[in-house]
Amino acid sequence: MKRKLERFKVIESQPNVVEPTKDFYHSIKGNWNKEFFKNDNPITVELACGRGEYTIGLAKLFPEKNYIGIDIKGERIWKGSTTATENGLTNAAFLRTMILLVENFFVEGEISEIWITFPDPRPRVRDIKRRLTSPRFLSIYKRLLKPEGYIRLKTDNTGFYEFTLEELAQRDDITDLKFTDDVYNSDLRPECFDIKTKYEQLFASKGERIKYLRFRFK
Image 1: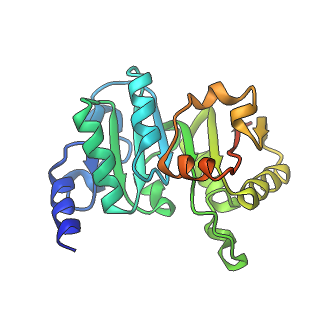
Image 2: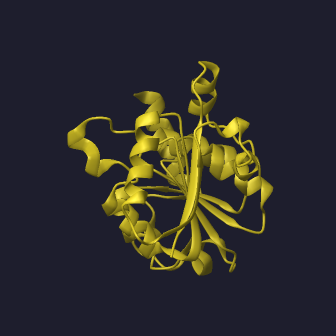
């Protein structure tokens, strides 16, 4: 508990973290470029970012873009924001909030791309609405994304992967959908930049194939 409290104190002082203790927590919506990053570069969001491996990895590869990792867990935000600071990444930020509340922090069309990296698969039937590719979340993403913006998903969970494909198949506003149930042996692998999260490394070491898909809204 002591370590957790110490880390919460750290993220309160981290300039690359947006969380409830910060003055701009309730005014950042629509102002990420102007007030936070102070540039006009496109914004990519990583949902359920965990330790922020993709946020950090992409920020290193593409300094001309802005990246925001979103997670509710303070300790995960601490790890990601600390690593970003240690690497001098001024184009990487972290938002501590529930993903269901993401519309409180972005206006329509403010996001250029969304990554969903190894989210909780929510396997119980009663939790279907909480899955990050359920209809209500897809509707949110569609509002927040710029036209032609991609959504990209990586997961080890076969059930969640198949659920997502089924949901997309039922919609008439999906385009440019590509997917693979084994990204390491797919021509889609370059799209993932060989960035691997902690969970990805764990599951892959156990022989689990990593699934990947991406699509845009019409």
